Image (tube, rainbow, N blue to C red; front, side, top):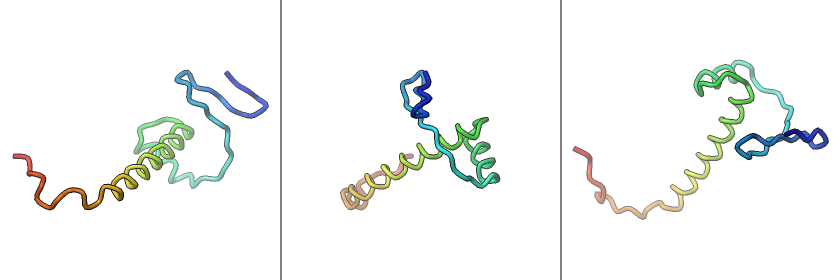
Amino acid sequence: MRNHRSLETVTPMGTKLQRKSFFVDASILRQAKKVLGVKTDAEAIRMSVERIVEMEEFWKFMQKSRHTLQPGSLEEPE
């Protein structure tokens, strides 16, 4: 499903994608594709951006929950 007026696409999973144009360091993009195990530049960029958002949300959670666990309250697995 493409809407050429707004340059947006909806994937089969219902995710709305919007076309963007920007410059990227080609060697970093190649590294990202290799590390992420994807074939296309678009997949590497999408996955990278998604992971950045996930990590930022995680760090915000970690900062909010700081000092809520008492030292020694967790046991080391055997």
